[in-house]
Length: 68
Image 1 (cartoon, rainbow, N blue to C red):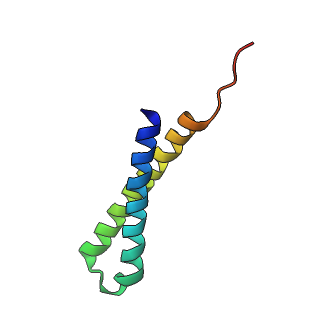
Image 2 (cartoon, rainbow, N blue to C red):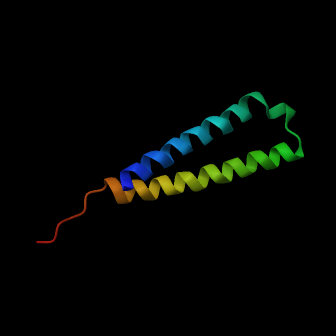
């Protein structure tokens, strides 16, 4: 379940990253005040998903030391 959630969140993060970079590359000169707010919201959402991705990666793929 953790691996599935990790891959779903990584796909969402990748899609958000593509969306933000395409807005920055092609539409930066046409952004209005609302467009800047939309872009800021997307960036905050991207940061939240990156944080979730990092936390899930640590919990899912790091090896736990076994007690002796």
